[in-house]
Image 1 (tube, rainbow, N blue to C red):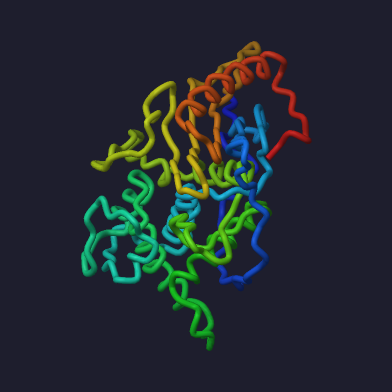
Image 2 (cartoon, rainbow, N blue to C red):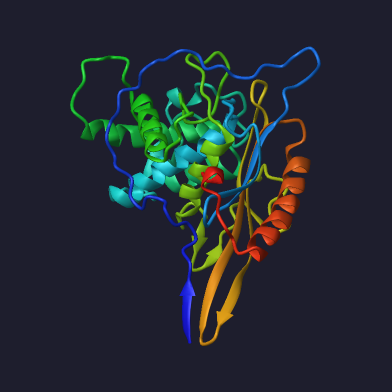
Length: 320
């Protein structure tokens, strides 16, 4: 029997070009503000990961603050550095005083001078959403990127800004044309210029991230469980296996979910086609991100089943 397995994330670039880009300060974006009547409605999106077909969306192209969802881009830059530049995630980094900038909570209990592996910093940044870990990663990886770039006379260029420039270069590569990163953590208090992104841009980023085995923290085909407190209350329910939470006063409650079902096998005589089933949900500016996430996953699967039964026809206007 001939079995055809469709790729999980077709159309996503397999390599990331590392080059330093100029980080230009532009006008403050127009982000929806709260009104006297209450909070602006949340922005959300549900998409089929395999095709990029959008099943549900609301305000998905509006620029919003995204809080710690920023760390998905941070992780991607670190993993690209490891995969494409031969970087070693097992190497040790010393946490400097500069890593504490923008850190309001230090739940892990880091201290300046602590020595920790890049891999453990990556776990802390993604699983526990630790801002200090994200900053420490940016400084250490930024130093390696900075050393590979031509010398600049601009004293404002630091290892951290070099790293953030690479985050924006990745966003540009992925077609995230309504996104601006200004730091590796998503900290947005008194930041100028302000960071922003959209639900649809974050779905593009998440497809890229989930295409990396290292991002999914698999080892020997089995998912690893880090000894850190996850901030995602839905993890492990209804096929949900990630991805990231975020929350600030400006951003509200934010969430990216990845939900999986067993692949669908369609037989045609001696041949069979296997369709992976994987949804990505992005929610920005919610008052109840886990309630909204649970509802959108449920609705997403209902619409997915209807779409699949109709032949998985794709409207080009409803693609990432």
